[in-house]
Image 1 (cartoon, helix red, strand yellow):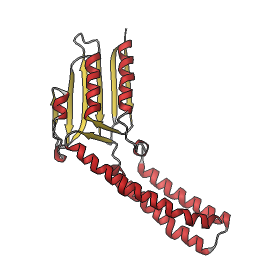
Image 2 (cartoon, rainbow, N blue to C red):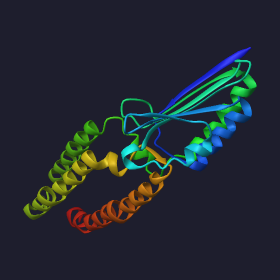
Image 3 (cartoon, rainbow, N blue to C red):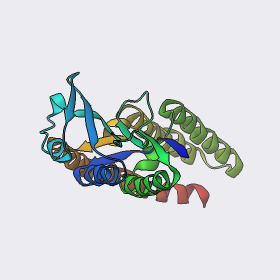
Image 4 (cartoon, one colour):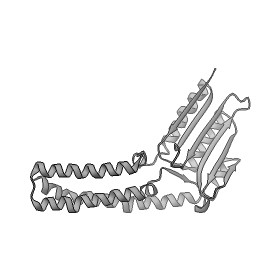
Length: 232
């Protein structure tokens, strides 16, 4: 008796040559020959006969990969598998579908899950915000409301009110605006580190750590003294 397994994942991913090669080998071992198709930034779809051909793709910015679909079907048509990686903001990032005997489908599911878990970037939680616009607006007003209520509760001085309302909240608001407009570029939910894509992602990682994270850490550290003054 055949069974089916389908799963849509919203996790961010960094699809490297090694991880894609592992997935192709997995499908080849349990299903059969793997067909590899891609959608690219120039509007063309490109098919690759082997994983080596995909890895050798130059992947320039003007023709960078936006989607990779790995699909396989056994010679007797009883077993099939599809793993789709998509960078579109309108679709789930990873779509999985397996069909075949229960033993094979279970092995495909478990081993695929292990590989995909290794593809999640460190900022996965940030990129999974379903609607960043609403999240930013809610967060801004929540911070302001909590700050105002705190002022009333502690009955702090006029200077401290000015410090909180004129400096801290505006700075937080600026950070949230930056996150709103540049968050997806700084922390992309779908990355294909093939060809030139690998060097592009390395550059992005440097920006993430040397600029964004360093700024957040320094900003948070700068808030410690004002907060202590407000509390005590």
